Image 1 (cartoon, rainbow, N blue to C red):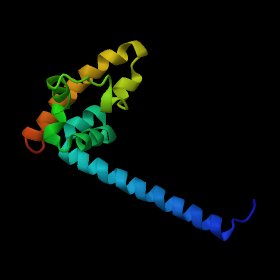
Image 2 (spheres, helix red, strand yellow):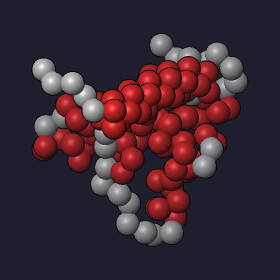
Image 3 (cartoon, rainbow, N blue to C red):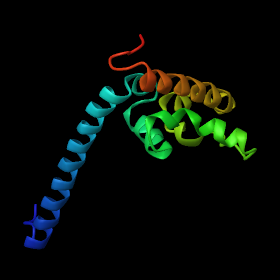
Image 4 (cartoon, rainbow, N blue to C red):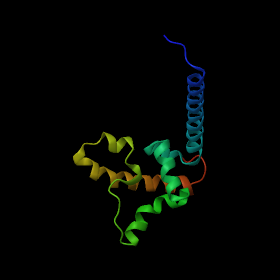
Length: 124
């Protein structure tokens, strides 16, 4: 092949460092989510669970998102934040609309258990 120019070499090193930093951040997220919300993590995964908690503000509010929309008589989202979950991704197009509310209900239960049951209350 051809030699890399010094500018290209700097760009490759910078990109490689960003990839390494992203991997470290993901590992940190996995460890924190397994400590903070093990049931929610087991249900929908680390990334989707962290996004749900981040959107709600904290774990104790994550189960109130749907109820808030219902109380204000606003439109409820069809899939919402749980759309990237593997359960919804594996479902057929016909069943995605049915699975999303079911999964949201289970996420609500899991987040309540994680929030109020105390440490190390992982359900099997």
